[in-house]
Image 1 (cartoon, helix red, strand yellow):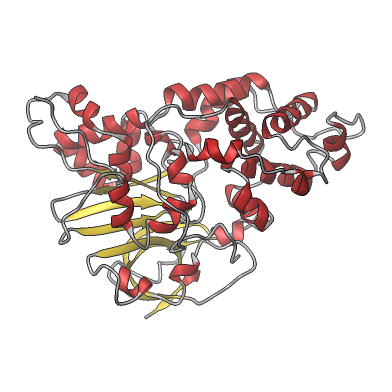
Image 2: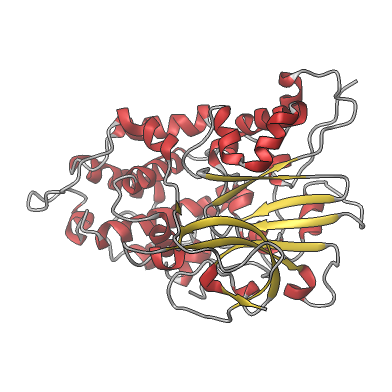
Length: 219
Length: 214
């Protein structure tokens, strides 16, 4: 979707403010948002892609005015409502309804380390050979889906070169919206800055973007 | 910090949230959600504490610094890192969530690498921990791809104009770790001393390793 999350190349957001390696969290409530979001995600009802789509689908005014962890919490509430973990009435009353019994139980503390160390690998076997090889020239499609996509706006309709083949990975654009999303060949595609940003751009700069085969055509 | 400012702004939130009946103050809001989820048996507060403890104390950029120090000193490891970074990093005990598929990119005298996620905030957690606020900011995500040299200047990094700069936009589940150049004068240092030179920002590409002290 062409949303406010897709900021590559935008102007006017001001300086980048460096910070030390610690603290990891600046407010105690940031920790709780982070942990609740991760623990609920670990129940397996939605993919990371679906949760990314929930975040980018927040109302534009929330995208601008809410802080990072407020947006995370807002998206989590939306996902929990959508998947039936909580009801509007429960949120309004801030207490559990005896009529809504979750079919899932909490991530046990004993499983936290395993869940974090296993992660959720996205590479899958693929029966066919990938269409492109490193060195091939490819052009990205000029597409504007209203659904989730990992092809950023600044790189649509642009010509680049396959820099790496990463294997076949679950196609995020589909996985955000359905359970049986296929794996598609994934490539690191390198674009000259001048191809993306025009003749004034730095001739010594490139941007390499991970894109799936359905984003690409031969150039 | 930018995020603190964003969190402390006195802009009223009720316009967005009064539909859900939860408090608009984020601290009260997440407390209400957590209480509700605990009551429903959907989260265990001890598990939440364990998650937080992991990323506050166990998983952070000191992990990545060990990987870089070993890459600087062990040619066999460096080759394995080039061939399959996920497996090489797993040798050192690091892996898992948000680091399932790793690629190491090496800085050289000719090439500087810089990592960003323009669409969200993808970041290699097992080796770098959770991303700093600036990495998640629109300021960094917007400008790193169109004007990386100006971003580097804000970190006090100035690259020679003839140096090639490769920006990596992490749009999939591949996570990139920058292997910075080994500082000159570090030949006498052992792994621990080398790792201490490796800053978080040098493994994202917004910084350089620390210089060797006198």
